[in-house]
Amino acid sequence: MWAGSVKIGSLVTMTTTENRALARDWPDAPTSPEGWIGRAGEVAQILAVDAVARDRGREAPFAEVQLLKDAGLVTLLGPVEHGGAGQDWPTALHVIRRVAAADGSIGQLLGYHLLWFWAARLVGTKEQIEAVEEAATTNKWFFGGAVNPRDNDVSVTDEGDTLVFDGKKTFSTGSRVSDVTVLEGALTGSDAHVFAIVPSTIDGLAFNDDWDNIGQRQTESGSVEIDHVRVDWSDAAGFVDKQFQPRVYNTLNVPTIQLIFVNFYLGIARGALEEAASYTKENTRAWLHSTVDTAVDEPYIIDIYGDLTAKLWAVEALADAVALEAKKIHDDAWNVTAEQRGDHEVRVAAVKARATEVSLEITSTVFEALGARATASKYGFDRFWRNVRTHTLHDPVAYKRREVGRWVLTGELPEPTWYS
Image (cartoon, rainbow, N blue to C red; front, top):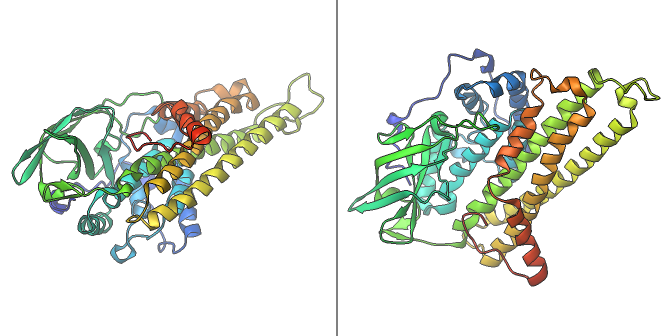
């Protein structure tokens, strides 16, 4: 997959000279899940310092991506023998959640990167998996992806020993800050889809820098033009002699990315709740008609924080349980059955629905415990709601609830699609 297309020397190293505040010397890499989650917490503390200012700006997050590299988070799932952390998905999801609490955009970037880092395992042959993971881990590649499934407007043409990608994708998360980009397109004359990794600087790949949405502003998710980008047939993920080698695990990209969504939603919600609580303790005043002197003794404020915290804890617990269920599937990737996959997708759909609703509720309701002064733009409390509101529109949550409802009433398992 891809090692043939991705020539090491052609990649641009994403260093930064503009933002030295993010540079630091990291100690030896952690050796336990708890250590890596703690490392993510340190990264989050750094990101939190200027999160509000960066949300207002239009700068591409080169420095923030370099921070993720320097801290070892981009190779969290990489093989230990190649310098990676060798961690599993439950740990990775906790790391995403921790980073997103400080900065939802960077949490999303990290989550998408880890999915595309894993894409070789999802789709590739065993030889491709080994080649990609060695190269990606050793060189600390940061992945972007031009794989918006609703835009079926990239064609892939067979030209003998090579394939040629042409078209456009409306969204391409990671774009300019990535080292490599995962391309996807429909193979002309068939119903097959082809994935391949190319350098993000390759000729014919043009990122349009047109991401200008209300939330997740630093995810570099704008459109991309793909003009005659050529790759070797040997780099087509999962293809042998031009024939795709199907297995059930190929379809785990959807529940895996949906769990990533769940965890950066929950991270953003936790960030909103924790930052709001700090503000309430320090700045919010009791209401003038209250019988108490401080906001922390105000009954309705106490109720708000108690209610929202209980809801967050409940969804976090469900998310952790579903992540452990996913680990069993990832650990036995070559033998997973359609029934196992379907049962897992139902659970993912359930936690996705609940995380969507709770994160929107938390990021909106905290304002009731903050007071009018907290709406000043300098505090940036609106960014939490804008971030989850923007991304939770990725796919309609009603269809997730339908998956669960159909399973309850009829035992029907979701058919693998681009969104289920």
